[in-house]
Length: 396
Image (cartoon, rainbow, N blue to C red):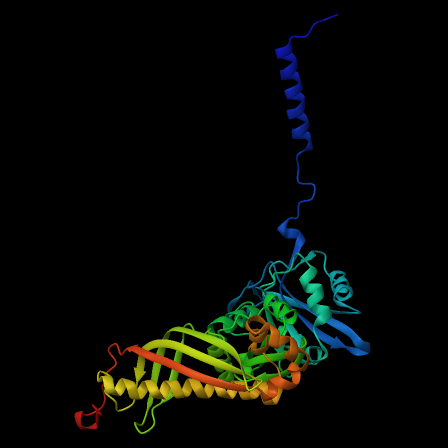
């Protein structure tokens, strides 16, 4: 019998393994970018017969190119996106019907905005959120928007002058303008938590070339749209949630003919639940600091006593924003978007067990005590306005 050298045998086996690995490698399940239809935004609306209308905004590969022959005055800029829609009995069925209209596979991994039409939102978001939450392609940080007084597809089709992709303008406006990153993740967490309701951003169509604009917040109750609060009251919501980390707050200064603007440097808030005489109450403590950003009053803000006058006016402005927000949420909408019930469940669990069943009745009548302490740390270079004469300046 022929004897094979052990060293040679090992090399032979190793070589065979390497050869097999080379033959087995490959991208049999690869997906090329040219095979995908990239969804940048989508909308959900009610359709006749209790069905669902699902619409998608898809980025065009040649978006932004010039059309119209040789160019010149007759050339027009093509849209960088296309909107397609389909109807189905549920989200999956509607999406399948849209897929039939495209030669490329729909890809939701780049979707940044989901818009719910007002009618659909009032009927409830349960089915849509369940479908979105289970799909691994979906980003849970996708912004959630309610089309105030509109169908979602109406906003989806709206152009915006300075953005090639209009819904990208929506996303930027929520962060830079509203200051709230309301998303699918937060809505799902709120819906599955005790004593707190979810929110979404509200948008409505603008006039002329404006396309669309922010319209405050949409408030939910058990995943059904319950009402709205405007932009001013949204500021109050931000104070309560401790999310006024940056930005400008402006206030009139009574008796001094003008407005002072303050740059917010820091802010925090505490929601403290308490039982008083067997009644639940909420204490809100708001703390913050900032510096003078602008001054067109007659006050010389290099004088410490004048800073105190401005500080008092700013504190009153914050208090008014917060109080108006709470009144709207309690009396007009009846939605605990602040998490007052959640505070009881976390810090007063034994009392919460007794309150939970009746919280829908308790919340609108809940006594809320508010403490605001916002301090102006520096006046910077903001003395009196430069255009005032010396005898017009209030130094003290």
